[in-house]
Amino acid sequence: WREGIALVLTSGYRSLAEQATLYAQGRTLPGLIVTNAEPGESWHNYRRAFDVAVLSPAGLPTWPPASSPIWASVGKLGRALGLDWGRDFGDDPHFDYHPGLSLAEAQAHEAAQSA
Image (cartoon, rainbow, N blue to C red; front, side, top):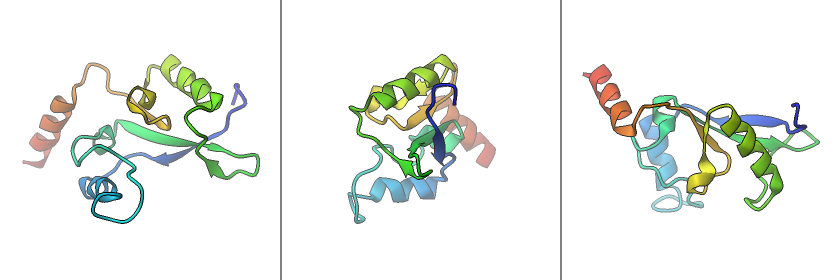
């Protein structure tokens, strides 16, 4: 709010089934491709990621184009909080937080919990 940018959370935890459906979108299901992460390959699957949208003046979620300076401001704020920003792989609305934890370690932990 201090920067005058209102955000809304659009995605947090995703089950493996939800990730599979999103991954299939634009491939084997109708729609545009919205993720390149297969089930188990997304930090969303380990409660370590979230996506945001920018709220319009009318309070509606919007996703400005990547060229919009608003994403640079949002990303700078996220990084100042210690978050990894999705711009590094072409996903401006995405942030994740997993200091010192690799995806392989998260997968192994999840597998151990399920056993």
